[in-house]
Each structure stands twice: as C-alpha cells, then as structure tokens.
Image 1 (spheres, helix red, strand yellow):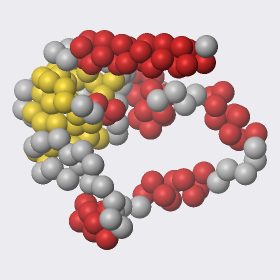
Image 2: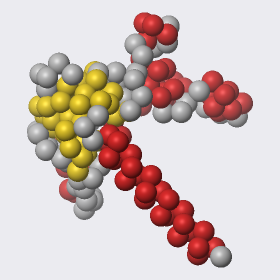
Image 3: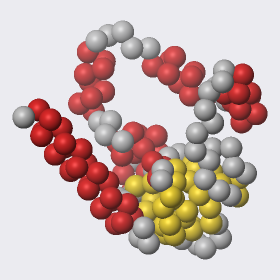
Image 4: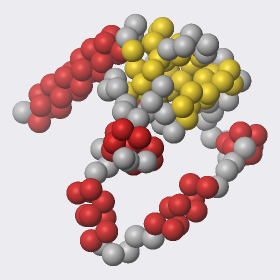
Length: 156
C-alpha cells in the first residue's frame, strides 16, 4: 500500500511540474529576487548579459531544465536565469504596499508575520548575524576556486 501511495505522489508531482513548465513557457513572469543576472547560457558561471530588478516583467522564450530564457518587457535584455528566480504572480511595487522590497520578496517566498512570530518565540535568533551574512560578498572567481579545490560539481 505504501508503495502505491509513493508512486501516486511521484506521478502527481511530476504531472504538476510538467504542467507548470508548459504554463510558464511563452507567458509573462516576474523577477522574484532582489536582482537577477541574465546569463549568456545556462549555468551559474556563464557570462553576464545584464541584470533585471525585482518585479520586472519578462516573457519566457524557452525552458531548459532549471533554466528559463527570458526577454525583458522593454525588449532590451534577453538571457538565461534560474526558473526559481521567477514568479507567475505579478509583483506589486513596494511603494504601493508600504512594504520594503525585502519584505515583499520574503512574503513571495511564504515568509509572513505568523512565521516570523514563531521564530521569535524561540528567543534565540540573532537577526544582526543574518543581516551581516547578507552583506558578505564572494566573487565568482573565489566561488569557482572553492568548488574546484573542494572537488565539487559545477552543476548546471
């Protein structure tokens, strides 16, 4: 019985994923990260063709695995980005909601006041450490060296 349930769940999620990919292709999506770098091809270390800001509308030209080739709504930029950087839901400007861009981005990823309160209830979180960590920058070359020296996969 457990095997049947597992097979059913896997089939269900595979079908949903395929339907989402079809719905996204050719449609309008929105940048769901603070900024994204458009790449010349799939892969994290591909050369940059430009950047798009949070909330920017893009047309999806094609999907290749975890990557989507997109064209900005202004038509000035075309390139590849991770599908995870995009949202099918239109993103509202922070000036219209009174929320900061970071707050809107977190809400788009499911982080809300209830979840924040649950984290705070533990009393051991140090938000200053999170803020400090977010400001740290690592160059692509440093990251590539780390991956190479650690014999890690570059992935796609």
